[in-house]
Image 1: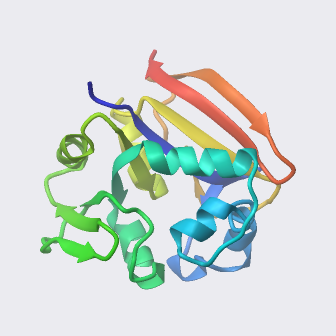
Image 2: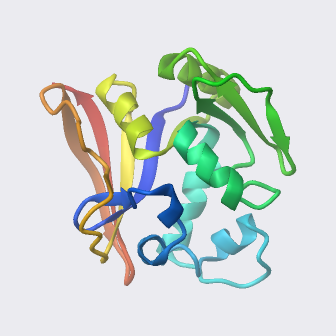
Length: 206
């Protein structure tokens, strides 16, 4: 049985998931946005930062998101930023399909992450990711424009947003340009921790 297609992102209280400029990734605002995940035991394990770290519901959610994912899809902008920032052992540990206009041979990294570059569109990338994931889920990893393409195409089953108590003021909005006339949401769950609020919704056609 095929798994779900989902995305899971951190978002500021005013609706932004990243700064406008790639140069500002890993900057102060982005670090504040992601602050909830840095102390977690799972985060430290996945990036091989050493023993220790916090457990609890945030940690459980982060681990479950990783464990359900059999393959990921991302846009070229996210890949270009990550190629410079990820450690040698990239934190996916699954096949990753990069939607791009530029042909490139697969890029294999230590730890079972291989990046495949797909030049024939978002649906082709998703088809390949589904095949690679088997009965596990496919995660649309980002960035915002790629997530939006999949949402507007009706290809996303579910999403989770970790709302951080941070204001950006400007940047990349999660749903900027969404076709709201075609997309409807159904609440699935809402959980709060001292650092963040986790909201999960299913998507369906209006």
